[in-house]
Image (cartoon, rainbow, N blue to C red):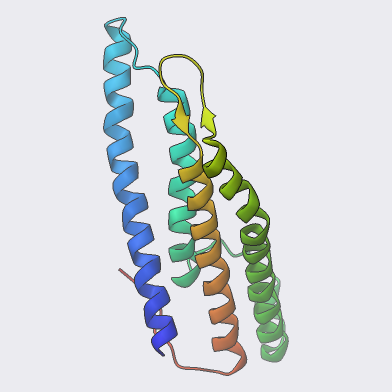
Length: 166
């Protein structure tokens, strides 16, 4: 299915960006620790890390959904008949889609407002723009919602789709 291939590609790209940013952030935090030991702290570290963690999570959530590696507690479900298991799975997938798509819908205005108003986090020497984080939430939440929706359609119609791996 071309739509699944496209979403898989976008999901992988977002996951890679999130992983690369997490890697870069480790060195930034390390530099801050070293400079703090020398009594020369890097301004804005708290704000950069706080916004980055949110961005990293939302850039990778679509991959977690599509690769079916989201946390699942199915110890009761596995004891039920197969038909009930499938119904519960589809219901859970649709709930996940609804959650992330509603998050997308609710976040559009704040993200646009943040961009238009030049919203920043932090005071003093370094102020970190908030709008990239808000747009990462939109993009990641949208991809997660779309992936949940696609997985629910795969289950409903018993489609053959490969599990996404790296």
